[in-house]
Length: 354
Image (tube, rainbow, N blue to C red; front, side, top):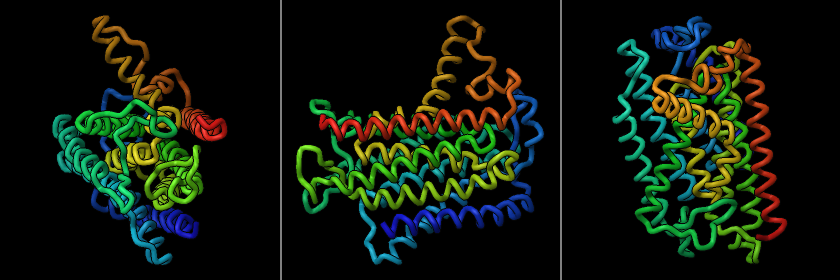
């Protein structure tokens, strides 16, 4: 438990103090956000706001985890290292995307194919290692079964299909957070709630782990307590960054932050055996992603008609005249309800012993 507190505290201080320094450096270098002309006109006032703040989140999470391991004299687990690899790897792809936007002064960075190839490459390494990295008891960070609150009996996939499933999970969550990151503090606050949920889930799974307390309700999850340390670092880093990212934002996380945070959510879902539960925990991200899919599909089917005034969903409400801060707070409330519902389902399943 001490490691969890240390990781969260160090990561929070890292973003709280480090982001202020990053803002000064990014402003001095002129690394400001470019705004698309086809977006809401109110966003034009944000042109030039420093971006790539996700770098501070990544560094703070790594420092928080490292500090927790050093102070508690704990050896990093395979699960935590793999999760951090996925987190940093996707952040690297996002950084390239952000840097191209800034250096070439355009609103589009990496081409969609290049970004997809990068996500697949990082996800493939993560999936293959997580499927094959056995501990002394033969348990791997990821199993071949699709999971809800634990592995679903009879839902085991062949290894090839499992890898494809993990890649789809990573692509869906990373792009979902990326689409949500359109208003000041929206994605950061919602992400903090989801990672906070994974702290609780991992602590509970550690206390009810089959290696310590075998029984019909135990969880066969590898390294749950170490995963809780990483989740705590991510939660703290998001809260600290939110101080500067809340409206009016002094800095944006950019794709560097959104892709890394989304990838981490996918990693947690796969390793804690809560892949389908993530749809509930991250309900806000799912709804916003669905709004884009529906908008594009309907536009193509009807040859020009739209369901929403603009997608992603948050921009639809902007064009309806809602104030940005109103949208953000209400969407945070929705995200909080989704997280509470997901945790309730997780605990309810353990109580009834399905």
